[in-house]
Length: 409
Length: 106
Ligand SMILES: Cc1cc2nc3c(=O)[nH]c(=O)nc-3n(C[C@H](O)[C@H](O)[C@H](O)COP(=O)(O)OP(=O)(O)OC[C@H]3O[C@@H](n4cnc5c(N)ncnc54)[C@H](O)[C@@H]3O)c2cc1C
Ligand code: FES
Figure 1 (cartoon, each protein chain N blue to C red):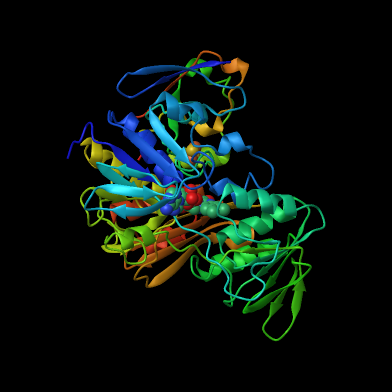
Figure 2 (figure 1 turned 60 degrees about the vertical axis):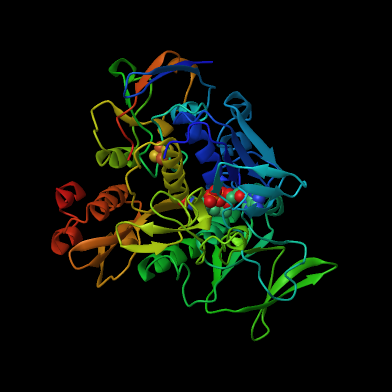
């Protein structure tokens, strides 16, 4: 489909939406592009909000996807501080929170996900924060001064990165996790143990198998986290990081097929041929696993932005990528690729005690996923082997005397 | 501001003034130059900001870290002059730098 002059409206000016707008111009789309976002600022990168930016090592300019003048220069109509309230698919229009109605030729939904709220007493106290937007991050950074006590509720990547950054800023940190181990949903046990030890050695406390019952406060400000059993962990600021549900309500209200995210095909097209959905809000096919999934990563947002922009401008579709992600904590570079579906063996290469190792998740002779700690070669080779669906020798993979180049040869 | 020339695989040239302190990758991405994807935004985690640096500039752009070296080992179409452009900081010394982009970053 080549729709050279069609008007493209993008709902959600985040990482996916901002990238799609820029790529449409790069790919030669000549028609109007409108990019509508609820946040007051132009598209920016979120990963540094819990990492380099939080520690004060990156400025706001470096977060922005493009400089401010880019949008005017390339004829992208950037509408900020405005929420899209409804999609009228039959009429090809959307309604905005400022009362306007806007027609579209092609619509791209890139509304992302939002921080899940904690449904317990005290969640509305001052100092109880989440971390999704730049505004959230400003609030958190302002609260993390030396000696302040941070309680992180939820031991996922963002919470752990925030704890590491808090330590770098001289604040205390405790991580509270409902499961018996941190990263339970997203990493294997070897990684959980490695990161727990690494954080403990740097002064972070852990409360595992712990259920938060309420947040306690004084004069409207949080003072502690109460666990079941009654114990209270005192804190000056609490960060809730318990997942991010998709912002797919306007899509499902418009009749688009949604199943925990907006269902799309490999071109990022929804059940309506004139509507695409990209980024955290989509539920997409995973070519290498013959499954569908909702991914939450920059790599996914960018891949789907490329898919949608290619489909709209009539370019050949980009190659199907293996999902991957990274996390920076202290001086640890953690990279992972793939998803451990149908795994029958977890193979360790290297020694966690040495701070450089990788965990391969295997299904027969195929690598399904790799988790690499300070091991870029294992990550890069693993990602390629997953993409190629090429059988490997388990014994050679486990042997660090055999280089990854040789394993992949 | 240092001028950097980015040359796409198809030969298209883009001469850009890049602020000191930005990376060579940022100079391209912020100006919407095709050919550098930079999926990780400069965290040295993706190798989709691969460029070839003219040999004459090898000394001025500085040495590769072990991390960059390992990432590049597995990138496509790697040559002796390959670098990850997010790991090269722009300074006055780099005024006139020429980088070429590979056919694809994925
Ligand atoms: C602190 C933090 C750290 C992260 N670290 C990493 C990392 O290391 N690596 C990685 O790969 N990923 C990381 N992520 C995830 C990554 O940022 C997301 O996957 C990515 O931002 C998804 O892009 P998106 O455009 O789909 O969603 P978003 O970037 O969330 O953008 C969606 C935008 O749409 C707007 N919006 C929503 N509804 C409407 C509406 N109805 N009308 C108008 N606008 C609307 C929202 O306000 C938002 O601005 C991190 C996320 C966070 C929060
Ligand atoms: S931008 Fe990812 S490695 Fe350079």
